[in-house]
Length: 120
Image 1 (tube, one colour):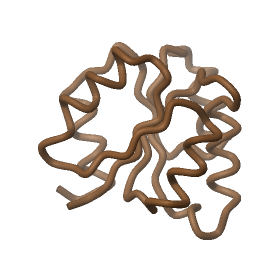
Image 2 (spheres, one colour):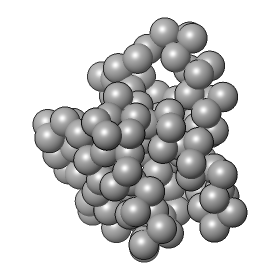
Image 3 (spheres, helix red, strand yellow):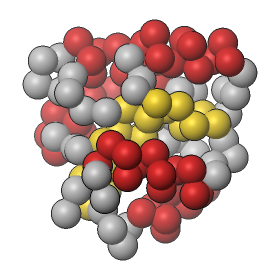
Image 4 (cartoon, helix red, strand yellow):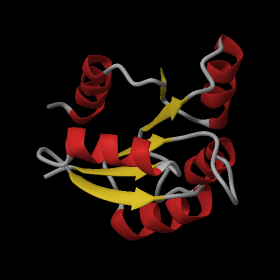
């Protein structure tokens, strides 16, 4: 079973993602950018869903650090964020995010993006 790291500080959003994904993926949870780095190192997920507005270390910085780590840089990162403007997407991609999805999450599009990276 493929592993997805969900990085989300808002419990409601986190719970929604867990409900959508728990039947098909092993899920690892982090509530801030610093914890995301720890969980990614520990679990070596197949994909990361990264919120960008996070406490302690935001998703932009966490993604830059992930992509700078040779052991983690291959892991696709999809930004899931309420920052929905084109400039936010450009900034997310410049930080290393492989893809971008604005909140509220379109479930169909989320599943399509996940499948495109995980091949299922």
